[in-house]
Length: 345
Image (tube, rainbow, N blue to C red; front, top):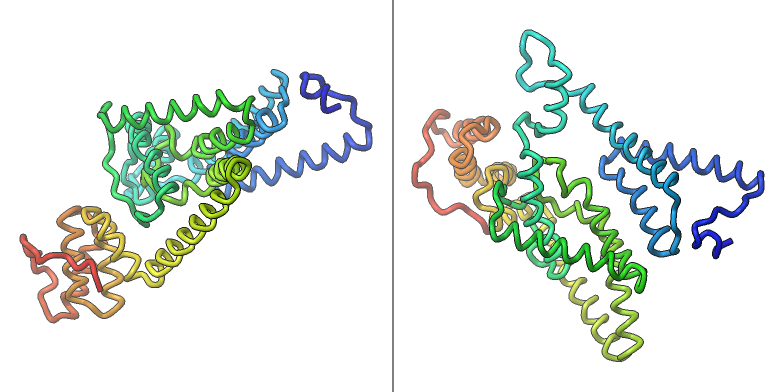
């Protein structure tokens, strides 16, 4: 049966097994719907399953099966989109309810706070810079940041061109080695498939978030395991020593990152040191300092947030509260040349 499946044929299945398989298939579809409604990027799971079947097991799905899978993926994509269109509300409602077109544009191109997200082409160009940064953080994970400050790319800059060439080369390499080294090819293609929703043409207000690599990490694990297995076959002692050293380094980096996450103040101090010109980072650092009783420093960072984004209403409200607590006039303008922001405890 395995040989016939690999040759593109479908072996006969007993009726009892077919009924059981149908029940499991329907249960899988139900769980897929739940997954997509919970987190939209779960729509890439059918693609990952196809990759496993084709690359790891050497199957050759028929055209009908591929069309059926594409239809399922399309239906799964329409679920969260339809839900967003049905529930979207403008931040400043007008006298007339929003039209279907306005709902669709709002669901696709509006951030959670009502601000427009990047356009698809701008977002795609920016991801040519962002995705290589994800790869660099996987290789050297000591510049992690809870809130990256990434400039939107609207033209073909050297950074965009270089990132695009790197991504095309990696994708081509994954396809090229898929038959000769299935696990290696599967690892590379898994990463691209897992990032296909959030790092492609669908704009998301935050263009870079480290947790978007979570679903891609099994592909990275396959690549690491393949490298370790190959090294063990050629130089077992060296590979073992390198593995132990790598594990020790990752444990140390994990401990250091846990120290950063031990409190809101340490977390946003770290983020402000890496993204000093991002208004949200300055606001959140101000909130953390405010909660720690450092009201004067909090006011300084609220002012910094307002300097970067004069329309940030939350920063203005928090600044007024902080100034009242300091005995100052709430509407006092910010210092045009504030002191150096606080980035260390």
